[in-house]
Length: 69
Image (cartoon, rainbow, N blue to C red):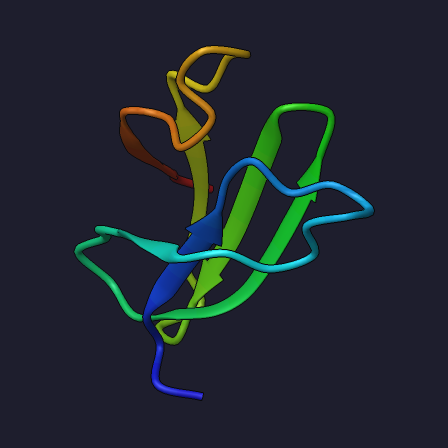
């Protein structure tokens, strides 16, 4: 695992893999959880991030927000 985050669009049961897109982040990602257009991530530095700007037309979103706690 290299800390980079990538996603694939346009997948289906017939098309199970395709070219991946790099998703930029200012931190190296250790863990990602996705469900119903919500993406959470934990960085290698143990910071919590949430992806914003995700919708049906912009599945990759617009950027990351750091959650301070």
